Every structure is written in structure tokens, then in C-alpha cells.
Length: 449
Image (cartoon, rainbow, N blue to C red; front, side):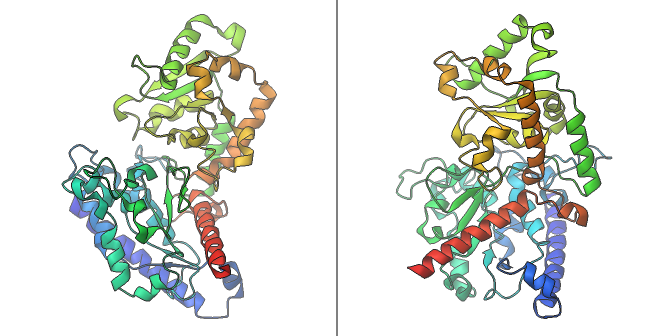
């Protein structure tokens, strides 16, 4: 099954790539289409032609890591996964690990591709780095994790090295679909600990890396939204969902979808569970206006990961969605909540505000989210319920409208989507804009030195 899936993916991606590059060559080699040329000014992207061992071949190992989930079922639809049900047009069982494949497929539709690296404003590396990292994180190469990415660098140096040497990698960018923490093991760790050293390699310091979660200090990585399960194919499907979000009755004040919080040690998830249990037994609709004060969707052991129905319906019925940090500060649930029009409640700055500056402007956070320091809740007894109940209903309505306006920016629309839907910039479009601007700023800084 895995090899058949790989063959189909390879065939389709190669066909799409060849056609897209061919179309771009035609438009970029002629001056009879000034509109296209003007629209693509400072936006040309060259896709580096990498051997399939750096991307599609890696998908054939989708079931070979026993202590990691088998992701073979989620390769369908170019990484969007299988549809949630046969009649679904917009909803898929998407695995966040496959953002690299989703991004690769979408960039083949980017209107400003060029086959000439010398005129490109940026060079995209279609390297599935997070999938490649699995053999170092969970497989037989765990003790050689410092080698992650070295094969790619050797190729870039040996095959048409002028493309890399033109700006020494400053104009290159790629996507890695795991948190940056998984790729920042110091090179001198002996014996190796968790993670690979990709982001610690001096060879890649100049490359712009798009990840679902970045660290606070490095400059080469930029956070982009986790893919949700919502991938509309056309404007009608998108607008139908927006109308559903607007009309949905919010019968729960707050919701937490996740696991953890059942141990004895104090932490924010334990505090949330305790407060929810107490609130549901002590407060009623008469004094709150809600049928349920706190709704917990138990997602322990990953049972929600590929089943959006389990948590999206409750999110549609909740006013606030709690986003406590887990193993790392960020959560895919943040973007599920935004998609459902549920106002996110953050407990750490690194959960979103310090991360997704391209997609969620930092200065607008008070307009669409609530921030409650976790230390205030865990150690000082601040009640989340008191904070949320203290927000006027009129303010809540404004926040929800702000959330709805953000939905296009955090969704990844389906590849091959309608022209009408393409007029709305989605998470991919916004990431491309951010990467191009970042590379432009870097090259300008270099030229001034």
C-alpha cells in the first residue's frame, strides 16, 4: 500500500510540477503579459529540483517506525488525508506531520514560479525534513542525529552549486513540520539526547525555515499554523462554513480539548480540569446564561488527532477555547478553535503571540483572544471562570467577529481550489509572503554590509 501511494504521489506531483514550470516559462519568457510580470515583481520563486530521496521516497517509510504513528493512511489527497466521510468536500483526517507534503503540492500552483534561479527572489527546497528526521528520532540512526540534513547540503554543493553560492543560502527556504525544538540538539552532545541537530548546523544558518513552532531566540525559523482538517475547495464551501460558525449557538462558556492534567503535580492542565469539575457542579444556567459552564473533550492517547468531528462540534458550541501548553507551548487546537469561531484563551506568550506574527498580528491579540498567565492560575488561585465571566457580552461578540476574519489566514485551502477562493489569502499564501519579505530583508542587509 505504501509503495502504491508513493508511486501515485510521485506521478501526480511530477506531472503537476512539469506543467506548472512549463506554464511559468511561457509567461516569464514573454513580455506580452505585463499584468503577470507586474504581479510577480519581487515574488519569483525557483523550486530546487531535488532527488526523490529527499522527499517522496521518504513517504515509503510511513509505517516503519514502531514507536511512532503509522502515517500511511494520511498520505491521501497530497497529504490532506482521507475525507472524514464520503460526502465531505472540505473536511479531511489531516496529520500535521504532512505539512511538508501539503506545502510542496500547493507551491506547484504558485503563480510566480520561474525556471531560472538567477531571476528568482527566493529558492524553495522541497525537502521533507521532519519526515526524514524520524529515522533519527525513532529509528536506527538515533546515535547519528547530527547528520540530519548533511546529505541535502552535500547535494546542494555538488549539483549546480552556483544556485546556493549566489547568496550562500540566504535566499533559500524550506518547511519542517515538527517544532523547532526537535531539530536543535547541540552538535557536541555526547551521547546524543532527544532531537536532531539540523538547526544547529552552520551549513543551514542562512536558510529560512518554516516550522509549526519556533524557539524564542533564533532568527532563521518562523512559525506557521499547524494544518487543521478544514481544506475547502471553493468559495461556496468556505462561505457555507463561515455562516455555520456565525449561526452556531454557544451553549458552553469554555471548552478544553486535550489530555493530561490527571497527575498530582500542580500544572495548568490539572488546574483546568479541577476548575471545570467544580464549576459544572456549582453553577447553573440561571446565573450564567450557559447550559454548560465547562466542557472537556478528552483527547488522551491521541484519540482526537485524526477525528475532527470529536472536537469541532463542541468547539462550535463553546464561547472560549482554553489553550494550555503541553509538551511544548503551541497547540494545533489553537487553529481548530479559530476555525470554529471559538475565542482562544492562552496561558503562555509562547503559545501563539510570540510565534505566529505573520498570520496572527501581535498587536491584534487583545481583539481576538484572552491571556491569563498560568502562574496566576496554578499558584495564586486565579479562577479562569471569573476572568471570562467578567468580559462583557458585547465585547465577546466583537472578539468572535475578529476571530472569523482570521479564519482564511489560518486554513490551508485544498490544492486545485477555485479561482474565487484563491482571492482570499490562506495560511500558505501568508507564509509565502512572509518568507519572501524575510529573504528580501536579509539580502538588503547583506548588500549594505
